[in-house]
Image (cartoon, rainbow, N blue to C red):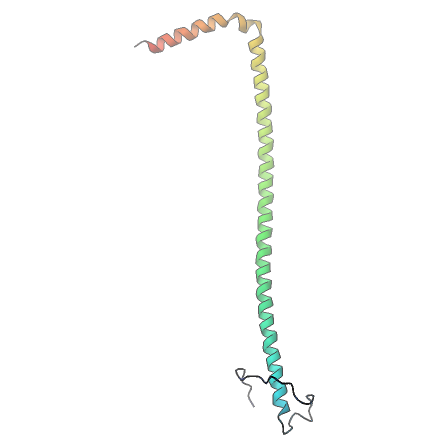
Length: 130
C-alpha cells in the first residue's frame, strides 16, 4: 500500500483507538489513523519550517545588531579620540592667546609700536607703486 501525500486526510478521528487488532478491521480504521497521522506530520513539518524561518530571521537581526554595536563602539572610540584631540587643541590655543597677550602688554612691544606702524605704511606704499 502506498501513501499519497496529496490525498485529503479525513476530518474525523477513528471511532476506536488505533491498535494492531483493529488495524485490519473492516471499517478501515487503520487507513483513517494513518491519514490523521500524516496530516499531523504535515502540520508539524509546516510549523517547523515556519519556526526555522523565524529563527533564521532572528539570527540575521542579531548579527546585524552585533555588527552595529561593534561599529558603534568604534565610532565611540573615534569620537572619544577626536574629543581628546579637540581639548588638546583648545589648550594650545589658550596658551598661544596667553603668550600673545603677554607680548602685547610688554614694554618692548609698546615701545616698538611706532616702528611697526612705519614698516606697515612703507610696505603698503611699495605694493601700490608700479
